[in-house]
Image 1 (cartoon, rainbow, N blue to C red):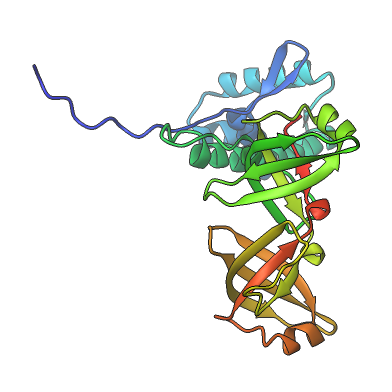
Image 2: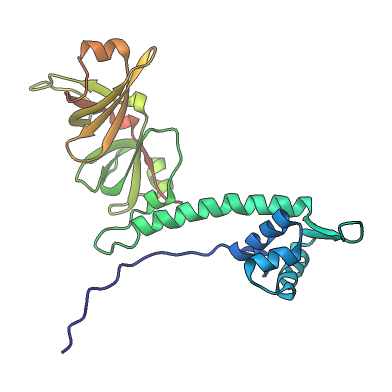
Length: 272
């Protein structure tokens, strides 16, 4: 039997097209052609820059004009210069919007390439969705336990490094989110909802989430200080504490502290 070499790495690629109904207006190539027309003021010059015939360039532009419902490119004839070609206002807006959408599309494809093709790891769906919230702390994991109550339920979310966060949410929220053990979920915690403490050896506190770690950095402000804490079980936590509190606890890079988070301060999110 012949020996097979190592498998090439998996990757993710994607193409972006603008459509109108069932017809394509264009993708990266046609948008680049529009950009060349705008820069050179000539279909002939734009076609030459692309190494294509004038007919092929005009056919592509004619198709875009027709499918878009109104002209994207306008031609004028006569005059001392022999006429010119320019983008219409709609063509300029469409080209600018495509550039914005393409930038987001490229970032999303790059994110998928980083997260989705390692077959030895679970696919963090919520991280790929890239939630945007005001919560500084966003931890992707999965529901590892669900303990129902009369009014509120206790939800346990386990992160990839083994860290477990407990959240208290209403039973109605549990049902509306469709929570179940093994389901991907994200725990969101406001930086202001994190309390830092030192010297807790032997102490008993009511906070369900007690997360020890080491201070990585502290950024002082006029009233509050932002503290970055590398937790012992992996992720980095952001806390917002008062300047007076930071001084009294002698919080500085390298100091060991414990982050206390009430279960009611943890928000649970799932992919829609």
